[in-house]
Length: 378
Ligand code: HEC
Image 1: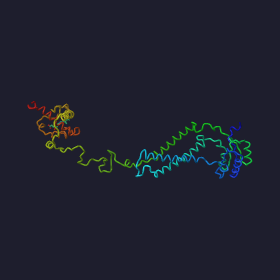
Image 2: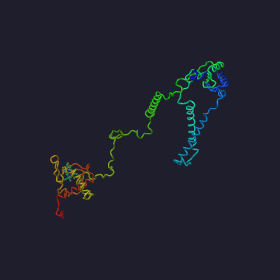
Image 3: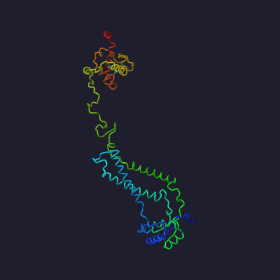
Image 4: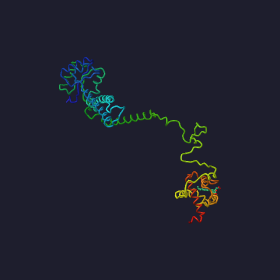
């Protein structure tokens, strides 16, 4: 009854010699389930305890081999099967080039894997508790005492016998270690409190690292082109004498696809030199009609007779059926549309040169309609 809660009986000694002697005796008595705790490794103890060599090395070997073979296989598969790429003229399976990676993966898997094996197999992770934890015994052997602990599980175990043995050996302090209540219960790691703490820590740490790396320490990679000082459109600049940030094109600059008007202020020359490049076909005339009705008819009237809808609000223009205008060359009318005439404004912004020529042809058609000849009926 009493023994059910008992984990072990421990004895504390002052010197390494005493503990070595104690182990010798305990071993001779035939105990097998016992352990020794010392503040530093005591040479020869393992031999006295007849400890078999650790099996951890085998795990490390297997894990290391797994790493080596896995890395080599993966490189062979990617580099010579799945996506072969010639690199520096080497063969696809370039063994010497694969050594560094193989080495790294071997060491990585062996070391990390061994630690994990130790944690899970030997320490029964995620179980974190052990009856010896947090006892005065453990505190003493972590400092300057040498302790031995014979477990209750041992077939020869008997509390009184063990205590007598320790006394005989000269132990300074003998105590019983009990299982704490939590032992063998659900590991503390799975308690909601701890999990919430873990999540909270993860969020805080990742938030802090994100802020530090992306905001606090972030440096733009090579962005001198983007960050250079420059003049914004419509803004002032001291570089130029006139103080304007935007520059005018060099005089005489011709924009692609637009011919400059060469007869500014010379409508008569324009009349002589400019030739209408279009014929009065259906497409051109209907374009001309559309543009004339939109832009000219408000003043000149739908039939160019000078009977404007704007009558009274704007000086009436003359009829375009006068002999004067009928005898003008196409280029002369083109000049009026392009530059305007006296109070008639320019229509060069509203109409492209092509559209102006089309309007001219439509004006010609109107003139012909008003002054029809006998022949036209035939
Ligand atoms: C805002 C009203 C207005 C509009 C719109 C207008 N004109 Fe005129 N146009 C006039 C006036 C006013 C005159 C007379 C100018 C003057 O005193 O020399 C005139 C003169 C003319 C003349 C010369 C007539 C002459 O006997 O000297 C032509 C040709 C002409 N316009 C064609 C057009 C064409 C084509 C359009 C359409 C693209 C147009 N106009 C749009 C008001 C207008």
